[in-house]
Image 1 (cartoon, rainbow, N blue to C red):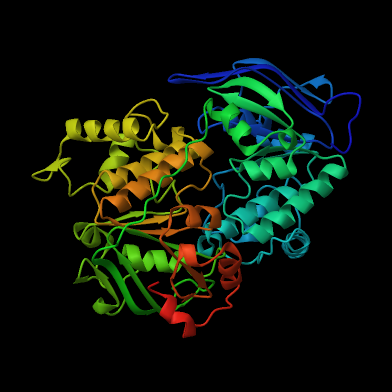
Image 2: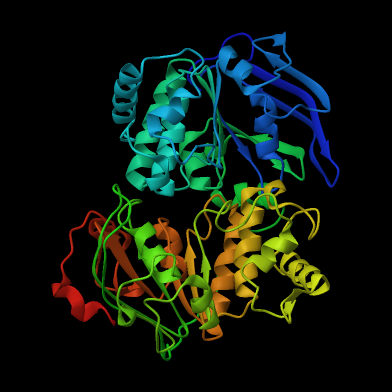
Length: 512
């Protein structure tokens, strides 16, 4: 802790928030001092995001007191929070896709600024913090990682005295994370208080001075993360020892996904063209694709899911069938299942119940009979997903928007797994997911692989890829590296390839 005055910057006393189906926060006490980086830890659904929204004025508590610099306050709106000096970077982005970066950021500024001046400030601040963004770029053309940069820069432009960060590094590169940490430490040294939510325990230990742990909406303890181990922090969060993934060696079977010389011009003026991509994924194996955000992952996933079909059918084969021109529904009939990186809006419709969200990709299942929806089957299926994947929610009628990010991710992944795929493609499977739920999702993918399913995982988490993958490749500037056995490469080698330093001369490694 760098600076501490005689009184806290923020103090919560007995904060309680109750929804019809869940107690989000119950008598929560929290103290944050000037210059302190304070972590809030807990499983998905533990009440962390609700508590942060209360501080930021998005949600009103049902009971309790909030003191700002030793004075009781009632924050009625985010605008009021910003005027007080509170800024927040949300886990789920609040950006308008049809507007530019500068236009989005201008909406969060309480003092109007000329567009040219704002663009210059965005460029300067983003470069200073190591999160470069083009102020004139349209948001819809940006990857998830790039959108995260916009959220962070938008908040930092207001020079907050308390900065709330909800999973800010979920889709940042390791280099960008280090640069962000430098920025946060500098802000703390200048007296800014930081509330930091992350499921990455190594981040918490490296960055934070203190931590408050929530479980089922209640505070279960406070600690100094630097004095804890990863395992002890996990036990405090989930109440038991951290589960470990079990992955046995097995021989892969037939080719389920074959990509042959796939070149695809992006429709996005700021996107990345795919160049001569070759890839095979066999039944009974997990192949991982690493890469820095914005290097063609979005375009590759669109090509594989059928959202952007190719000009030639034979560039993509699914279970031996030429599928390059097929749409997503036609590919699902071939056994392909897909989990996009954007949960809300693409993986699930926020305003629909979990049951109806199960139906979205299950229209060709037993939930639809003779063209009519069997609502009983819909409920049974959704309830089975909720139970099997331990989704914390208000039942199958709960809206997707009411779930925490991690619980919604468990539901989406579980939904696709329970449709019994032959080929499964998953993008960023554990983004923003707590450590226990992340292990559950990873083990579920391993079990799919053990059942003979071909699994392709696109992730920016190198640790995750080495944990669950049989083979790993890297995508950089729209090109795919050789595919190598995970046991025959290293994080350092993959990290080097992520910068684009590879050639196809290594292609003999591709089927190691």
